[in-house]
Every structure is written in structure tokens, then in C-alpha cells.
Image (cartoon, rainbow, N blue to C red; front, side, top):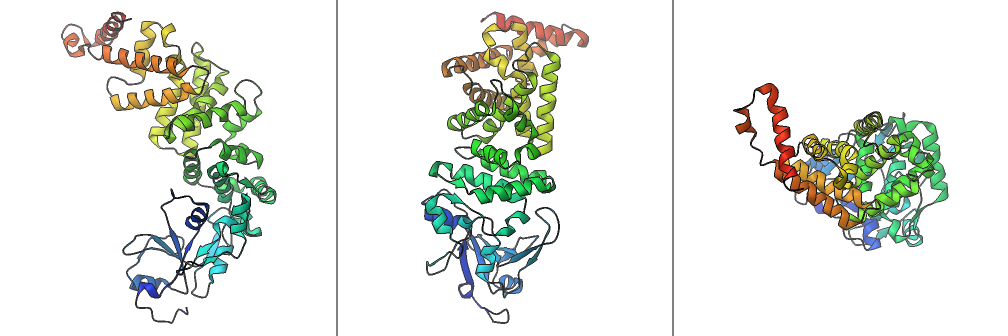
Length: 408
């Protein structure tokens, strides 16, 4: 459709369903409710005149006035610099659908469905779906370093359906890793891919693919150390634990906490309960890891708490009453009940990835919850009328210890 052509209705636009929605439709996957569209032969002015709302910053993407689904003008991209933003984008009205599909990452993501239901598959995506292959569309794959993470994520998502990454594609992913361009990726984009991958049924595949193509050591050196380690915290153990957590809980924060817990164990050489220096190193490593990825506060808070206290919860029967009180206070369990319960839930998932039985884990969690409720009955306000401010904190702690002793 030439740009000069007058378009008076949305129905006159030359639109195609593209990308993941097409792939998942052919695979019989219904969970993906997001549908993306490409519009061929239009201009931004035409889209706006039909009531679409522009939302794209780097290239024209518009929201449908009724469905609010995304409609992007067909485009091509030319590499102009480093990183995933180093492109010159052409969205002129003479860009064809085939040209738009050619610039995409994988053949299984480079199919389209026309308004009459016709499948448009110029690069063999349907055949690759049938053969379980994740294969790059063209040599231009190497121009966008973010594709390394995307392919690893698709590998995790489609692992249960027997998909593997095509060897030549893995070689291109390694070339990207070796180029150093992964360092150009914004932390927020990396974390977005990690967070999405953690939501899959087999999240370990994501990290394993990154390891195979050399990206893990560049993006997540803390995890690479787990691969390099030959003791009980080896990579196989780590990622078995991660997939086990995925079977236990759908909460991505729980799954992320398993990773940070094992990173902490790696730094502490096992149990650091009685080693302040080792504990400090583990906590510092996990904080740096979270800060570098720019994870949300809830992820970082949980991760630090898990690294600090999960092992203590697991052996709560061996702890002194003083240690239990200090743990609850350290978790801010009296003032922030919601966060404390979130810790308990996450801790339950993490501990169940170890050799501790589910019954033992639930017993430990139940005990800690009971102790928290018990010391919450201590009336600090009443004690403040008896003791000076200098002694109040000490006296409150002693009263909390006594309260737990009553039920142990």
C-alpha cells in the first residue's frame, strides 16, 4: 500500500499477526495472550488518523484504539554502532513484510498470519517448529547482543517440547559473547530476560545455554564460579535445585532466592553460621549481584535474608533461644509481618531444594512462626515505663527470650 493512498478505516490497513503469537498458535500453546501486529505500507500519520496511540520511542509502535494490542510499522534495521541500540531503523512505507521478518532473531519467530488466515513463512519457521530447532534467520543475528539472552530464554521455555538451539546459532551466540558486546546491555534489559526465564518450567536451561555459548561468565560470573567448582555445590547440583524450586513454587522471587542462596554458599564454603567473615563475604557478594542486575527491592531483600538466615531456620532445633530471638529481630519480624511471612514462604522453597525432608522444613517454618507470635506478646510499652532508654532494648530482648523459653 503506497504511503500516498488514502485510508479511512482500520480494516483497510495491511496487517499481519507476527512473532510469538504465531509460534505459540502453531505449537498449540494458549498461555501467551499477547498478540503483536505488523502493518505494511502505512505511515505514522495514517496510524494516528485512525485513532492509534503512538507508544514506541525507538521506532513507531501504536496501540489499537479498541483492543490496545501493539501494531508496529514494518521496518528494517541497519547496524550503526555497538549494543542492542546501535541500529538505524527504516519504517518507510515501502518496507515489505518479508524484509521485516528477515530482521528478526529466530525462524520460529519470523512467521506471520494474514487476515485471511494464510501462514506466511519465508524462512522455514514451521519446519523448525516441527523439528524442535531454535535457528537464527540470518547472519544479521550477531548484530544484537540481547539475542543471546532471548535465545537462551526460548530454550528454557520450549525445553519440555524437545527444542534445542541449532549448533550454528550457538556458534553465533559465542561470537557475540567473545565480541564483548554483552557488556553494552543495560542491566534492566538483562534482568528482564532473567526474570522471564525464571518463570519457565525449566529455568536451569536458560543458564546452561548461556554457559555453553560463553555468556554466563561475562554476564553472571558468580554463577560461572558454580560451574567451575567441583564440590557438592557444583553446577549440576545448583541447577537441579533451581528446577526443583520451579516445581515447588511459581513465585519467581523464590526461584531467584535459590540462586542467590547457592551463590552465598559458594562464597562461604558451605555453612557460615559460625564464621562471621565468611558470612560477610557471602552477603556482600549477593548484594553486589543484586545491585548489578538492578533487581527490585523485594528480590534483593529476600535474597539477603535467605543467605543470612535460611540455614539457621533449617537447624532451628539446635539454636539457642537467644539466637532465635536475634534471628526474628534481624528479619524485622515484629514490625513487618508481611515481609516476615514472605521470608518464611521463600525459605520453605529454598530449604526443600536441599536434603531436608518437606516435613522437617514445614516443622521448622512452623516453629519460627510460633516463636515470632510468642515474642510479639511482649509489651515493650509497659517495659518502657520501668526501664530507661539505655536499658530498654536489653530488657525487651530478655523478655522476648523468656517468652520463647516458656514454650520450648
